[in-house]
Image (cartoon, rainbow, N blue to C red; front, top):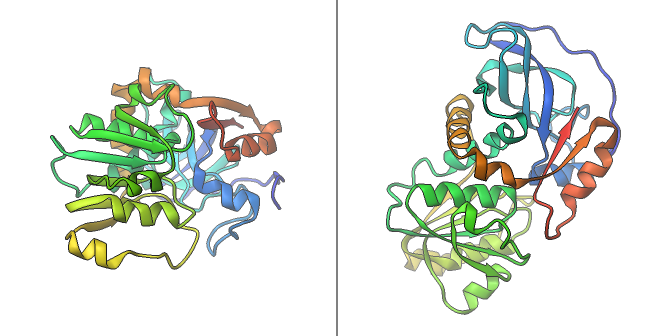
Length: 300
């Protein structure tokens, strides 16, 4: 039931599992359709603790030599039921955190890791042009990663993101829908679609990719079928990649490394923190598309 927080005991810990005591969690844009009821809870996902998956916590029991009791960690709940004070997770979805990385910054290493996963096969980006469609929290993190990898980044968003865009590596900011860039004939070597949920920005991404370029469809789809401009895409010899992460230990670790190195900048993506008694307001805030609201956290 949207807005309810049932209380249930944690399961026992088995081999290569950990009992996580959650200290902080981030709301992802992909959580909002489940919270609002637009997207149903999928098979394998629990209604208890759903939807939430970006977690920072402390290991309280462990079946993994890599993760001792007392270790502060970054974790991912692939069953999207992370809204719990304690929970059992596979050790492969949990990585240690540096002692000097605050929880409020460390939590953004989870989405940062997924960006690195989505870009794992794109090749050398030095001297290339990149477009990020959608400059919410993940789009800003993607812009920062692309910039540090050597790309010249353009960002497009209907909302004014000028307060953060330049610090996150956006060389040119376009405050308009992505369809505006399609209309003026812009193209880019790599297009990173960070919106998801609707079909229009994906279709725009396919029109905005340059000859021999790449589209990274990172935003989570809410539909089985999307319009695809096949003739345009075919003539440009472009490549389509998707953003689902499979190798969590590897890419959570990469996300932690990047955020640790750039903590002063990347921590600015967090704009709101709510307590456990404010969970409904936290989700309402995360769903509110307005200037000044970027990353929303919950402290259980």
